[in-house]
Image (cartoon, rainbow, N blue to C red):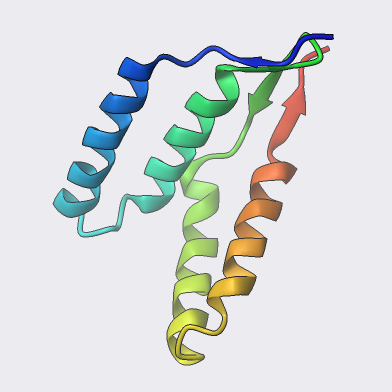
Amino acid sequence: MESKFNGTVWEVIGICIIVPILQVITLGIATPWIVTWVLNWVFSNSVINGKKIIFNGTGTSLFGHFIKWWILTLITFGIYYFWAMKNMIKWTVENLEIEG
């Protein structure tokens, strides 16, 4: 079976320009929505073994996690960051489906 990514370099360039602008304009508050937007783009352009991947995560569902992870990272002087990254990966995988 074939696995592939269908995104274009122009889309990547657009994302690389838009994401930092949105981060600055919203002072980082929109981060969960930006992250889910990028993840949705990545997975909607990905095919594994001939099947499309569907990402169901939303910025709203990620927002509470981000607040908790941010606070715990501050309290632990950055140590919790590694667990936050693991939890972010876990959340991403939990919000994936394979078509069919």
